[in-house]
Image 1 (cartoon, helix red, strand yellow):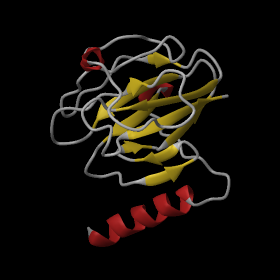
Image 2 (cartoon, helix red, strand yellow; image 1 turned 90 degrees about the horizontal axis):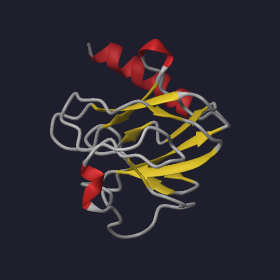
Image 3 (tube, one colour; image 1 turned 60 degrees about the vertical axis):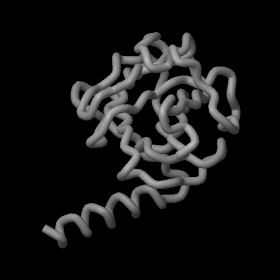
Image 4 (cartoon, one colour; image 1 turned 90 degrees about the vertical axis):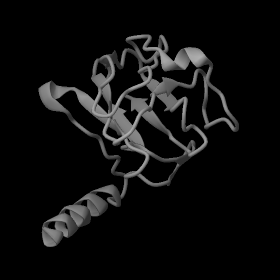
Length: 152
């Protein structure tokens, strides 16, 4: 079992270190799944600041893609909530309490997955316009649980 894990980890690290490569995660049915897991995904430098706890840290998708966030952690709760008009991750605590409720179905219109229980997934969110969309977790933003979606 240990050998299998080490091989999988080596492949994942190699893919993540490929020059110019930006990892994406594809779920069933052609939708993009972004995992939220504070215990598995460590800090990663990005052009927007330090990211952690989402995988991938930067997800690149085409216009029209469907995105779903999934809490793969063993505890409650995580959100994936848009940081409107941001070009870098802001400092401090930034989300209103409304981030704990599910809202929105498009990246450009704003969204929050709401508080996701372990194993739960968000609503489907459409990548409706090109651009860079930064998001984070209401509960763990300063962990720093935050990441980016780039729509091309």
